[in-house]
Image 1 (cartoon, rainbow, N blue to C red):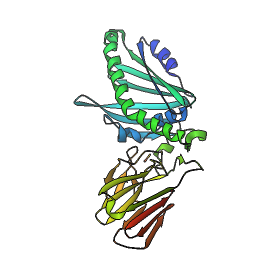
Image 2: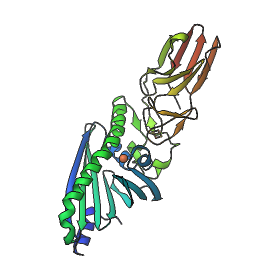
Image 3: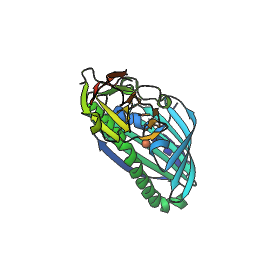
Image 4: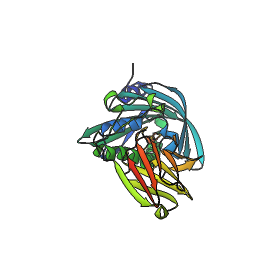
Length: 300
Ligand code: FES
Ligand SMILES: [Fe+2]
C-alpha cells in the first residue's frame, strides 16, 4: 500500500502540523520515459550532483531509501530520503529536516516528445515555525535550480538521441530504481538504419589528444593519439546514452560522466605498423602508409 503526498499531509494536519506548498516546473524536448528514468536513476545522484552524495539503504523496483549527505553552504547535513514511484508518471519523496517535514510530489506529462515536469513541495511544521516556511521554500527553489542544472542535460541528451531514432530499454517496461544499479545493462537501442563511418587521414595529420570522428553516437569514434599509438573509443555510453566526447580518463579507460562506468578503448592501434588491419566491435582500422582508414558502426 502506498499513500499519496496529499494523504500524508492530511494525516499530519490531524496531528496539528501546518503545511505550505511551493511549485517548480521544467519543460524540455525529451520523453516522459526520460523523466521517469532520471528520477528513478539511483547511481547518478553521487556522480553528477555535486552537492549531494547518497548511500543506499534499500532499493527495489519501485522504491529507494537512502541517507543523503546534502551540502548547504559550508555545512553537510545527513538526510534520510525515501522515494517511491506511485505510477510511471509520478514519484513521491518524503523526509524530515530538523523540525520540518518535507513531502515532494513530482509528476510528468508528455506531448510530442515535449515533457513537462511539475514538482510540488509540501513543507510541514508546528504552527510556531510557520513564519520560517517562506525561507525554507526559497532554499528549496534554489536547490531545485541546482539539481536541474545537472539533470536537464541528461534528459536532453536522451531527447536528442530519440530525435536520431534511438530508443531505450525502459521505454516499454518502465524504469526501475533497482535496475538502474546494473551498469552492465545496455539500455541504449540504436536505430536499424544507421550510417557507417568512413574516415581517412594522413597519419601525421592526426593531432595528439582527442579527435572526434563522425557523430556523437554509434556512428562516431573518439580517437586519442599518444605519440605512435592511436586508441579508438566510442562516443556514446551504451548503458544509458551519455556522450563520452569529453569524458575524463582513468587507468587507460574513459569514465562515463553519468554513472562512472569505466570504458576501455575499442581498439589500440600501433601507428608504426604498415598494412595492418585491426577489428573489434564493428570497427575496422586499416593502416596503409601514410594513411589510416577507420570504418564501421560501434557495437558494444
Ligand atoms: S550512461 Fe550510465 S555509465 Fe554511462
Ligand atoms: Fe538528478
